[in-house]
Length: 106
Image (tube, rainbow, N blue to C red; front, side):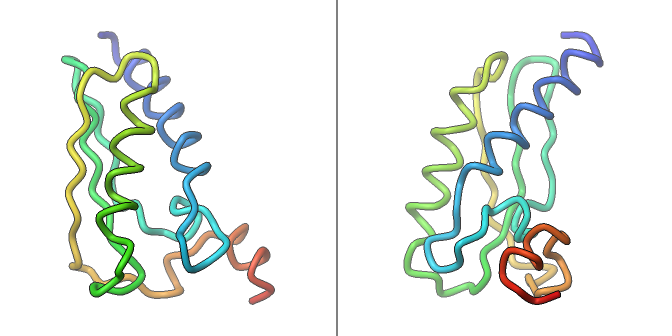
């Protein structure tokens, strides 16, 4: 896989993540700032490091599974590893301008 192909797949992964919504906040997980890192390997593995708005989120398993399943559908992705981390902890400063606008915070 070429570096350009990797960039294209990572772009498609971002698009996919922007269609997954936090079950408690009506904003997608990417714009909320829940996705800390996306790394695509030349072998086709998408490594995603993400967090939750709260460590005790009752929907955590469902959300991680949805990320896994939806990213696995992206063309060029052969495998998905989702790592849930809580350091650094999520806060509102991680949200994009689009998320802040959507929530009426600016």
